[in-house]
View 1 (cartoon, rainbow, N blue to C red):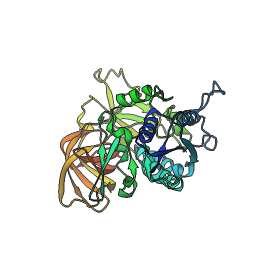
View 2 (tube, helix red, strand yellow; view 1 turned 135 degrees about the vertical axis):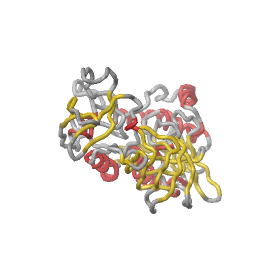
View 3 (spheres, rainbow, N blue to C red; view 1 turned 90 degrees about the vertical axis):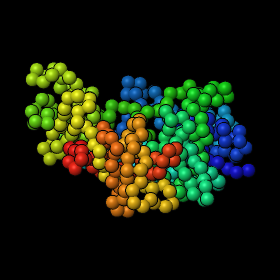
Length: 377
């Protein structure tokens, strides 16, 4: 009997993954990952008004225990705090210091869930590693392909774009072939304890909280002016790192009698002057790029393409596919030319490339251009 170690997070997706694998005849073991030490990082995860309330991370562990007991499987718990700090959180903070907008979930998958996790699972005798991601994997001629999840509304291949052939080789995604609705139905039909548990949101393993207050624990903030493209001062900001390109909410600059009564959007950052640049109109021309440089590219396929390749790209998770032409600048960077201008292509975020259902790989957005003019992102 083949042994599968499942990452039991305390949520419904990983619980149903474990259930399905056991039903398929595998020997299933659960592994709960603890990646954040609240006490060591002076970070209160629980409710300060109710000290008896269990913090979310511990509640997730208790939920994972309940699932394991219900399914009749072992549950191991392992700390990946050092790996998370070194490879994910430190990078996350450094990127914000550079006024970029990082995506820690991608790094968490690469270095923790599909690296540290697999090392520990191997020690437990795993033949395969399983996760609750909405993605699929296929293997042809000893090459592994990452595919979008069947439920495109929940597809998580974007967050798995940094995986290697080795990491994909023995990874299983049981719920990738299902819709979220079906996963909930399976959980309820089989009385899985987390059947109705709300999906987690927020930063990978840090959870939901006041994001500004959280960052203040790690980064010195520097307030400055909010200006129009013509350098008219119309407000003040709390720190450039708190704002992202295309942002509308939280600017607090409405009602200026010198300008039309229309919404304002972040269209750039002048880092040297510590100025946040805004413009009116959801489709402000300054928000659109048609040329992008992507660095730190991970190409999942065993062989890289040569010349130019037409494919699709996503420049943020919930974005629709964009038709692009890509070519290598060097072994780590790709130039992307979009067939149609793309809104808010933000440095620090991930650009992920697709050929139909196949996720080809991705990298980090380095710079965005409107024709040959570099945008102030």
